[in-house]
Image (cartoon, rainbow, N blue to C red):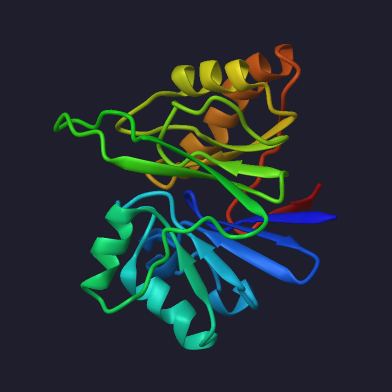
Length: 209
């Protein structure tokens, strides 16, 4: 049994057996007050998709490290370089129980396409970061609802191409409460037509696969 808990934005905890993997410790989760940080529990490893602050916040990473001295942080070279400035060690290895696809971040308004490491955990859950460039995914996929680099339409097309069994929402902290109520309904219908279930996890919600 695998439990998937969504914190906020793109931050997710995947728990299976005796380990809990936190993906993308972002500043929204750490600073907004929406999530009771004490509810996060014992994290055994951290995976980071790319260097943007809405996916990695150095203070959040350090907070996690302070709670568990043997915590391992994994990401790509760009994140390793960035977090080294905060004296945080990052491994670019691929830990047991995970697989990666090193793809490019979708183009952002300044034209950049930073490196992006998409993670799959325990063959169950795929976190693409901010990329539509994946060639495959696990049965459960984290799916951006809105972003400066994409759109709800592009995200639905992305999911239709990969055909996961289920998707959970991501990348929606920018939205108002009304927007977070509206967009899931907009994407759920077309996804259902493609045989994909939209699991409407709110902030802090979880479900078991």
